[in-house]
Length: 151
Figure 1: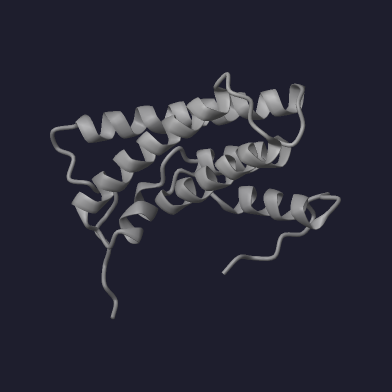
Figure 2 (figure 1 turned 45 degrees about the horizontal axis):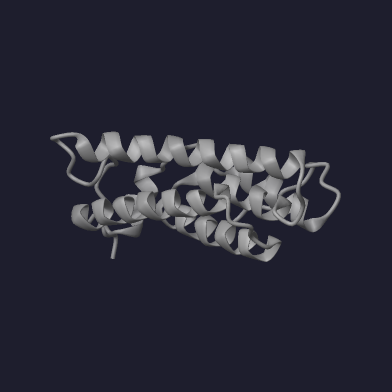
């Protein structure tokens, strides 16, 4: 359950929601503890999800940075898809950057360009961390403490 967020100085509900979620969420490239909970500690599933996210994020970024013209709606749809995928595996910075890009994707100019650069950087950071993690001989799919079933 989210705690109410007050004193943000946000001018509207959407701004308040973004500023609240960023303040309540740790600033991580990948939250491995969250991923372990989502997969119930299944190491193979964790590795599969990380590989799928890495591939999807690279593909979406290539589309967003490509030379083919895209409508604002197409850009927003790609960003929204990436945002959901990132948050599903605990790629917090990518999720935040995708959300910001989605809000700026309708326009062209410095804000949209900066948001895309931030998204690219977040994807690069997460992708590098995934590659290093999966390349470790000791990788067992989980870098977090085991999930305890309290049922």
